[in-house]
Structures are given as structure tokens and as C-alpha cells.
Image (cartoon, rainbow, N blue to C red):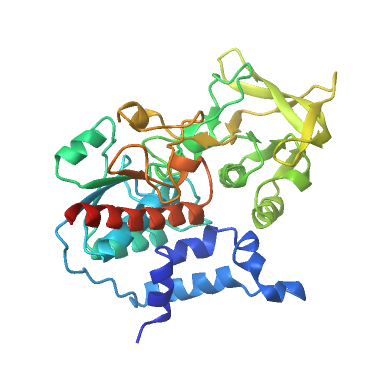
Length: 391
């Protein structure tokens, strides 16, 4: 008889992760019919409970399947790569994941803080995949250490690219090159992966007094809450109102509870430095909302002459990310769109035969569960592709 965890993990490769970080209120719980007359079933918390209990009690049955004699390479060990690898391993494929950093997990490890997603949980979920026979090689930068073409030359019959979207965006305003200006990606990687908050860390982060976080998404909330734990007074500066804030309500609520200040309808126009080239303040301008833009949100309009300064010794830009250009620039025949995302069909196939992609590498920054869905669909397509070649 299958355990609850086995049933859960057959549909979801990372249930303990999804039970913590997925926006259930707009996905599964948002479709719950109990929500019509009251409160939806706590699907996310139930998923988390079952997965945690199984991991704590070694109830997960991850047995290595019979090999089918075929090899597949997976680029990136984030949610898309882990899911694709797990699906293929269960089908008997010899799967190797190539991870550019020194620890597996992708954004689950470097991007999401410990207080939202304990790293022991990620390690246990990764360990279950390794029990299936998935091999994970870290410190392997595909496009530099080895190319996609060289992976095929090494005997892999298909390659899945799930390398995420790790290239940060900036505003292009004066002062962004000052000491103390971070992308949220760098800041969170230093905190989560490098443990920079510890005394004696190899790559430490300063304990700032006042931090401005620019942006209103979940990543902005994560960065702000990390800075708060480092002892700073934190302002989240966002150019729209609370109604347009894209972060999950739960994350906003937690940030407010922790004393983070929301400076809404404001936008930075300049970062000011001291005589040593370090951040000392941020000049912002007040905004008002006009008509809705293409995304349906009301467009922010600057109020002329309303500039003012916020004192700060660090600024964290949480404005979104795009895929790193390294893989696309070293893989001939791989089509990308104007945002640098790999173009794929619905099933994950790319313009290059034998190469498949999914997750943030093809959509831009999105959710964990969407990346996992892309990895699962691509695994099915890869299986069909290799079987068709063998006939």
C-alpha cells in the first residue's frame, strides 16, 4: 500500500518545498469550493505536514529503478531541473545534473531565506532524488566549464536546460555603482548560500543601519526580511500602492509584523554617495496612479517637484531577473526571444534537436510550481523523443 507521501510525491517531486513557498491562495486553494462560503481547505499546510512527517520518519520509498540504457543531462538543479531529473530517473534513465554553484537546489538554496524554506528540507528532497540514481555534479558552469555540444559528445542523448533566471535588473539611475548597492539576487545568495551573516564568513555582508529595498514582489520581501534580521531599519520603496503590490499577502503581512516600513507610491531617481563612494541616501520622487497599463495595473506617474531623501547605507534592487546569456551564446541554433528567454514549445522542445528547456530559463522569473510543471512536461517529451529515436 502506498503511503500518503508516495502518492503526493508521485504528482509533486518536491512536496515539502511546495508546501512552504507556493502561492496556494491563488492556485490550489484558490480553486477550492469551500472558499465560496467560508475558508478553503489548507492544502498547502496539509502538503507540508505530510511531507515533513515522511522526511522525519524516513517514510519516503525512493528506490533506484531498472536502468533503460539511456543518458540525459540536466542543466541546473533548481525546481525545473530537479523535477525533470526525478521523472526521468524513475523511468530508468541515467541522469546527471550539472549545477554551476557548489550546492544543489538552485533558487531553493540561494534565493529563498532559511526562515521560509529551511535548507535541510531542500537537502533531504535532493537526497531522495539521489537515491533514485540521479548524479549531481556541482561547480559546473555549462557554457564555460563544458558546452551543450560537449554534453552530446559525451554520450548524452538529450539535454534539459533548467538554468533559471539569475541575471538581475537595475533601474539605470545615477549612483547604482556605489558601494552598498546590491541586486536582490546577490544579497540573497550571500545570505542564504554563503552564510555571510556569520562572524568570520569568507564573503561577509555588512550589518547595515538603514536599508532601502526597491521593488514589491516576493523577492523584495525576502531581501527586506533578511536585512531586518541583520539589524537594519528597512524601507520597501514601491512605485504603486498596496493594492498593486505583487507579493503574496502572507509575505507582506509577515514583513509588516517584523516592522519593515512600506514606502508606497514612491520611486528612486538617484542614489547618493559619501566622499568614500558609499551609499548615504536615496532620492525618491512621489507618485500617483493613472490609468491601467498593459498588465492591468494602474500606471504610476511622477509628481513633479516632490523629491525627497531617505537615509540609507545600503540599497537592494529587487526588480526582477532574466536568464544569463552564457548558455544561449554558446549553443548554436538555440532560439531565444527579445528578453533572452529560451523559446520552447508547450512540451519543452526548443529549436535545437535534442535540447529541451523549462522554468525561468524559458519564461523569465516565475513561481516554483510553474518551473516544476515545466520540468515534468519536458521529461515526458524527452522520454518520447529518445524512444522514437530507438525505434
